[in-house]
Amino acid sequence: MINLAEPDLIVNADGSVYHLSLRPDQLAETVLIMGDPGRVPEVSVFFDSIECNVSNREFISHTGMYRGKRITALSTGIGTDNIDIVMQELDALANFNLQTRLPNPERKTLTIIRLGTSGAIQPDITINSFGLSTHAMGLDNVIYFYRDYPNIIDKELSAHFARQVNWSPHLTLPYFIKGSEGLVQLFSKGTVPGITVTAPGFYGPQGRGLHLALTDPEMINKLQQFQYGVHRITNFEMETSALYGLGALMGHETITICALVANRATGEYNPSHGPVISALIEMVLDRIITDS
Image 1 (tube, rainbow, N blue to C red):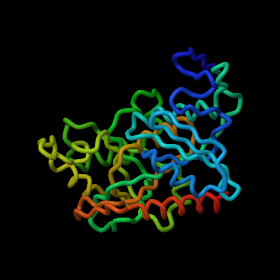
Image 2: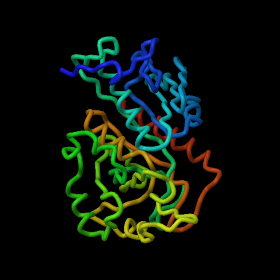
Image 3: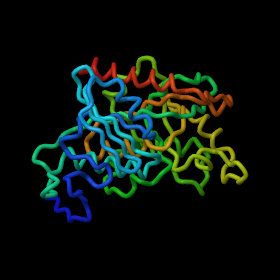
């Protein structure tokens, strides 16, 4: 039996979790997450009704109904450290009694879909297409703090990468985690499948040196060349490895779909990508309803 002290699971005076400021009754079992707080109203504008609007720091939540389906749209901020906060508190909302801090007798499985923006790294990928993260390749270390992480890593992909790529010993050794197979199938039509690299930063960790020299200037080339069966690395972002890792450990269904608004290989970037994001949101909402 888990016995959590108050500092381990902090509950606000109104019965909400510490960072998200949500109460269990305000959370839907389908959660759309996005880094940008400004994107939450871009999702909820499609809702037929909004029952709650909660804001704390970078965490904005709108819960409402879309064609009979209850959905929570939630901003996470940037990075795997924020995903650690979000995933732990979502799981606490779904599976703990916040008054006693004891697990509920029956576990709930959440469906958590990340809507992101990302940069492709393969020259044949068209900008403004939608990238489906079949796997995450983690350059971060969040998942290593949880004992059972070896059970959810794709050891075959990880080992093949270590053999095939002359990876710098000064960089974190990447690990690979699968997205939820059912959600990969649901969103496979009309998307570009591939492995998404989750970097612990936007500049050096994604091969942008600006005025600083990089430890491995060939890092992107190495990622572009990696191939294992049908699997190749398609894009960079900053959250998916923690989403997939924690989701797998907790028993939640997770997937990331990104608007690929730039291509690092071709040098293209779409600064006016608002319509692309709107199209991504509509596609995801409609697929959720189709699957219900």
